[in-house]
Image (cartoon, rainbow, N blue to C red; front, side, top):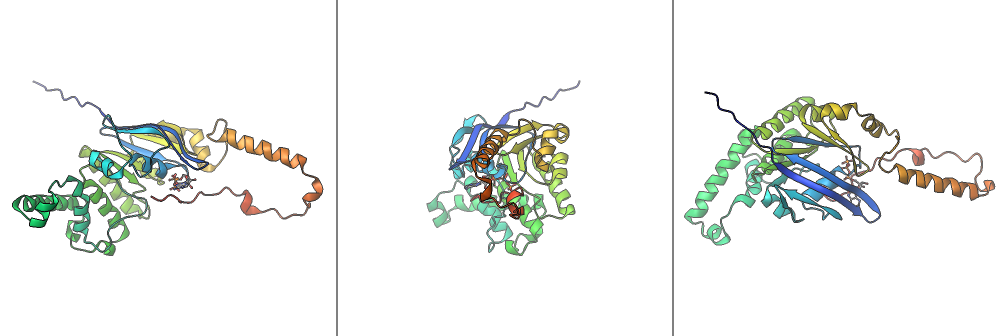
Length: 312
Ligand SMILES: Nc1ncnc2c1ncn2[C@@H]1O[C@H](COP(=O)(O)OP(=O)(O)OP(=O)(O)O)[C@@H](O)[C@H]1O
């Protein structure tokens, strides 16, 4: 007799109409994104496209100007600790470890949302607290084993090489027992071997039943890894689909190369500004602009929008 196993897909993350404005700048504009159980979803886009801002909206660091973020069907409050409690964990583009704590202690810090022992129990170090402490310690060691850092449990985290610090960040995020893990540029600064190892680690995390949303500039990593890829350009979702679909989409290629294309997000605004400039030029007497004025290269170069967010 054969038994049939059916796997049901559930929606883990549902972001609906998420918009984030900073004064006059719309960093994220009406973005919808879904991550289902068992999925690895990639979020890509040129520098300044709004990827990290979107992550910050998902994790409660920013209160979106508009839109909602739901985790397993429940709309989340925009409070980072409540988002972690609900089941979403993240890593940061700029590594944020406690440099003077050991590797093990860093993971134990990540467990605090899942440790229910109260203050008195901790102060009195009663049997309940000791049991919880032992369980936390065992789980933290298991996670270090999982990411390949158990042998460095007693090392200070600041003494780890860069690639291992990134692994430790992942172990710490996993310590909150999430159902969804958000990775912000997990391979930044890694060499090719470390990047391949990170790829394996992400697959292994997914195999443990944790859905993953990952921002990454390394396209090979993204296209190898992801079941689905969403492309943000100037704060808007331009394309979403399989790696093959996204790779073949000429709008994505144009967005990365900086070539304008019809219907590009922001194209209407650019056209409006150009028209206004042309109008102003026409109204300006020619004698104001000496013909031999040197052309300012910097002004015409496309600007790479630098990381100005508070939570990179
Ligand atoms: N706290 C902030 N205040 C004002 N503007 C911000 C803030 N955070 C981000 N921005 C702006 O929002 C836009 C999107 O930035 P964001 O960092 O989200 O892009 P990104 O896609 O993550 O870029 P990168 O790939 O370079 O990390 C940029 O123009 C940026 O300058």
